[in-house]
Amino acid sequence: MRLRQQYLSLRESREAQQAQQAEIGVQKQIQNVNALKAMPVELPDRPKTEAYINSLINDVVKNVKTNYGDDFAKYLLNEGESAIMQMRDSYVSSGVFAKSNLNKMEMDKARKAIENKEALIGSMDKDGNYVSAEQMITDFQEGRTDGFRFRGAYDASKVKPYEYFGKNYNPGGSKFVPSNVSEQDKLAFAQSSLNAEAGLDYYHKALKGRKIQWKADPIEDLEMFNLDKENKQATIEQKEASAVNSYANAAKLRADAEDKKDPAKGATYFDKQSRQNIGTVSAKGYNPTAPSAATVIKGIGVPVADLATTAVGGKPQITMIKKPNIQGDDFADQVVGLTKGTQKGQVRYNGRLGEIFLLDKGGVNYDLNGIGQVVLSSDPNIYVDQKEDQTSTLENRRPSRAFKKYEVRLNKKEFRKKYPDEPDPGELKSNGMFDDKAYYLVTGYTPIPNWYKYDEVDRNITKGEAGQKVTNELFDTANVQIPTFDD
Image (cartoon, rainbow, N blue to C red; front, top):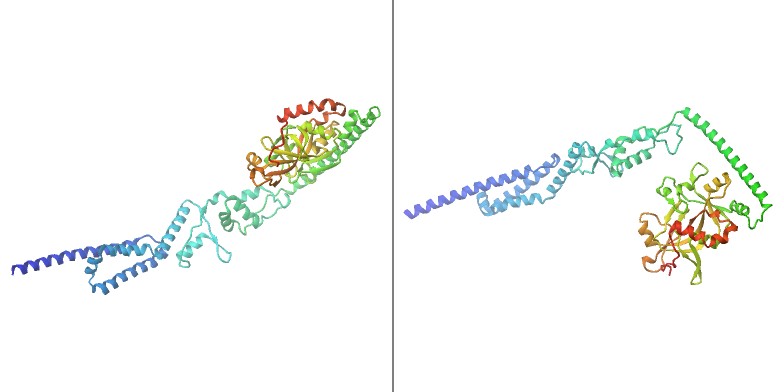
């Protein structure tokens, strides 16, 4: 009797303990479900997430009914904590949670940008129509789309289209005729002020279809402009007439002097030859605002821009005038530091050019010190830049500077080491299978300072002395053997 009482008492105690554990399990499961439902999601996603959580609860109910005879306490005693964790893991690894969590993060980015007073970047739909970010948010919140993607933001206050166009004339029109800014120019301005995507967004929001005009001067200014243009043209014609007269007078004086001097020996004959023009070559694509225009040509001590004259249409241009070389090709080569030789039966030159001026690259001057070179050929003529030729003619003097034209190989590796950001100076050629054998084939002009001081009567004196002395002082180069990269 006593044993039975003890057994009943023990069973009641065990059942009470199990009931307590079951109650705790129920509370934990309820807390777990509530925690899942309380996870932050955007309002349009909440019905989907709650429906998925409810489907997990239904799976638990089905499991209890099928495997535990509707005994929930027994279910909890057997599966307990693992059941709670399994429900949570099922939810956070689901596609429903992944999409809702991504939408939440993307919307938070948009809210942050709006708080910072930034404009949200929109997008183009499949039909090519612009859709603002604000419209995409509205479509998501009202259920027309299943998500929102943040595409970035920008500070629209930094873009000032009316200020920009109000200060600049229409590059394709007259400065005196008001003209509307084209849609293409408005878009280009917006994208250059921001970036491609932000600029496209700003264009659609603030510029598309709006009337904006380029700067235009009053019509009264046009009348003054035309009057000033006429005065300038008259001045140019007067100067040109004066130049013709000066040249004619100088030519007459020289002709008179030649009657009294030997034309094959005298300085007067040399002056006459310095005025002969047998051809011209102009720079291709010269840009007076490029950094290269400020590069100083060391041999004559002036920047590249100082060689430019005003061509037809008012654009600066650099032109070389070809003249006869009455001093002789060998003498001119010696003045710049070269002596003629042969290699494998071909004419080659010992020595180095200190610099070279490239007309075919828009008027660029390169310092060649430290760059392996092979001089392949020498133009027998002398070249004078048009500006110096015109100035010396007006001033009735000989040109103070001249150039010699050479074809040169420049070692690619050494050129790139010295000029890493410059475009190719000439045609790139390979001379073997190794990169250090590659070279640029360049045709350019090397300055000869004070070339016309070497009169024909002084040639024998200056040939062995002044020529090499001038070269050494200006370029600090000595005669060297032909570089080995010319195999």
